[in-house]
Length: 299
Length: 299
Image (cartoon, rainbow over all chains, first blue to last red; front, side, top):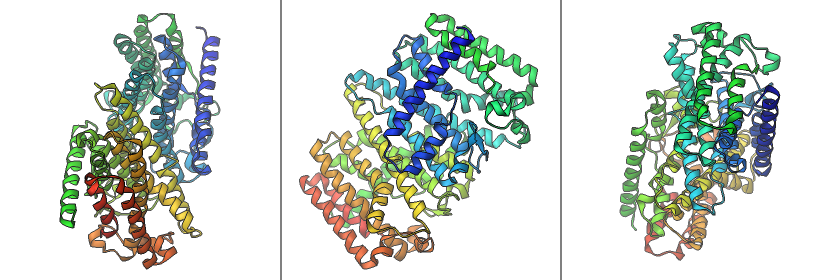
């Protein structure tokens, strides 16, 4: 898959996910204000990396895209809720996200707290909305809900955010601590995105194990690249500020390893991810291309 | 069921729920700080009204208590997350809850935001942790997850909190608006507690419909009584301040109807609830006794 093919693939999946998210939030009957706040960040033009990985994992195990759309949307809602809460004045106090004012800036702080809560809750409403004819699918969906909730919770993403907050401005983290923090903060939900896609696509245990290795490596490569972009990126392309990590004395890969070694490390992780895919046929080409994209992207 | 019997019943169910919640949080492997913050409010001696209603509804339809404990615990976690977030400085800015410092006072604001998020997420982890042998139960659990997520989300509890916040200090609400706000803010999750208990206990469609009527009436009676206690209650017994609604110019039943008419209204609601139970045999005696307790309680 060349760059143009990947670009077309990512764009097609982004449109698919955006359409599905719009359908879900168009159906809602809540007050205009809470739904507007939920949509504000959810529909602000995110990359849709997690839902795309979920779909690509389904394709890799020869499953049907229709069967995973609810999971793909739910995961993007959970990712977005975490951004809204991370941006709050009590947390990172960010004013710009995906090129637009953050939720609490565009609305107000209570509304942003509740919009985050509502997106997290809606994710589980969507994950359980499957109309059950074939009861064996009910078991699959319960497994998916459990996988996602565990990854997003206090043993996963939330614990990662706790460690991130308490590391800022304090003692710098060791490489091991930094890696553990990112494995929790971003890695856990990325792994869940891919695992979920594989489960719903009917993948076998061996396939799921290899995809987890892929997920863990690109998850970390994604974070290392985020750190690099915060040093070297173009704020206009990224839609958010750069240099903010340094200003906050955050522990980052460039801070611990330097820029060049960080780039080498990201490349090594991508190679590990590609190795895990040797187990799969050409239906996993999008996953291969995404692994390259994760470190080549400019936003 | 006389007062002493009800007291013993409530105490037994409270201990059962507290034990189960302790078991769940004892198993967790997250950082000490996030788990401590989650436990701080969760284990601070709440009444456990919602899980008790869930269990009592199961008993009313002749189901097994063991089958609903996960749902009962999950609902209490969701209730507690909503308290933690409602108490935040950006929301009600409360310092005392269940007789202890609120979560953000005991820890800090970011930790309280994340502890709330973590309890909400853990609720869905627990709801989906059912080990499936009998696949028909998987369908029941998906229905329960959907019922709870819908009640707790932006069409239910969260929308109620939005309306409550935006009503404070502004124009006073009409009686209809006040009732709609409470039906969302507290009624939806109370209804879900009872519905969930009935579904998991194997209740039929007619039984569930009657229990919904019961739930809606005692849910509102509970709120009217909360408003009355905020005027007339004893802060030492309640473990939180009184007179706070008036200070905040909140729309309440005493403010709109006066104290005496509010008490009459609460009694009428309890009578409606009792009428809905005529459909059931003496296994619903605890629900009957709880209906009386809802307006007689002093905290």
